[in-house]
Amino acid sequence: MIEHPEDQLSAYLDDELNAEERQRVEDHIEECESCQALLEDLLVMQSELAQTFRQIQEPAHLEVRVLQSISEEKIPTAAEKGWAFGFLMMVLTFGIFWFLSGSVLVKLIHGLLKLTAAMVYAASHFILSVPVLTGLTVVLSSVILAVSAYSLRRLLQTTAN
Amino acid sequence: MVDEELNHIIHRARRGDKEAFAQLVNRYKGHVYRYAAGMLGDRMDAEDVSQEAFIKVYYSLSGLDNEYAFSSWIIRIVSNLCKDRLKKRAKEQRLRDEPDEAIADRHLPDPLEKLSIEEAMARLTVDHREILLLHEVQGYRYEEIADILEVPLGTVKSRLFAARMALRKELGKEDRG
Image 1 (spheres, rainbow over the protein chains, first blue to last red):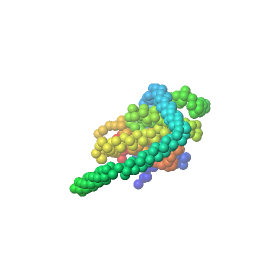
Image 2: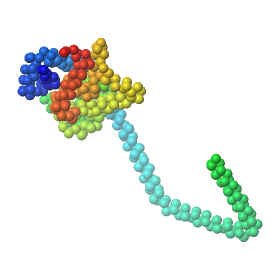
Image 3: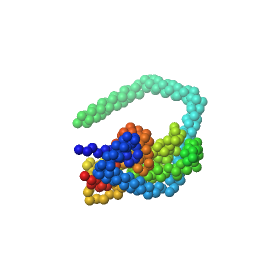
Image 4: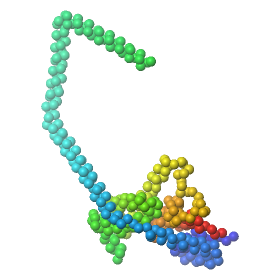
């Protein structure tokens, strides 16, 4: 059975064989009609393929569109840079404000806390000094406690169901 | 002489000269567009991808090591973009269609159907289409193709042969004994 060097035919067509391989293929083609026909087919196909794609016209003003897209893409970049700069400036302004007013703010919070503690202390003293108010507070606290306990129980029961 | 002129244009474009870059696009748009049209089988998609490729070239021109390898570098860029688009298309197709209809490219050729070269090309695998375009349309030598595809020279040889046989089969020319 004759061995056809078909894969070599393709490289032979492209002139990509060394002298020895080339000679071997040429010797075979001279003897083998089927390989001659295949070579002919490949040649025709090669030229048809090149011709088909040569006829495809490239878009006329592609370079204009490409340059347009590039300049359009650059605008958001500039805007982004503007945003970043604005954000940085804002952070910087807040930073400076915080640095300058920080001590005042801390003092203010500290004062408010002290005032609240003093008011709680004064209120408890006032309640204890008036017996009626003390009794009333105790009763009111008990009622609130009972209502809370009842509603909590109800809530737990509903969740379980 | 032509190469010298081209290198000068590339050199200017690398320094941000927009006029030089426009010249570069003008010179290579046919090369890029025909490749994309062959790979994607759709003119609109080919135009989109070509535009995308040149924008990418514009931003990465400074990273080009060797000005002499510009042509294969740009083909590598457009090739990657085409493959990404084909993958996206296949994914969309899978989501839309029945699983067995997703590989329409692999359908057996109808012996009575006469296909045009472009239709036959569209039925080939991506690798076969790619190598045929690089060799027959773009005119690259085996060694250059091996470099673009990053495969051994032997693979280029065997893949090109297989691609030619597959195209021949699609065109219905396989009638010898």
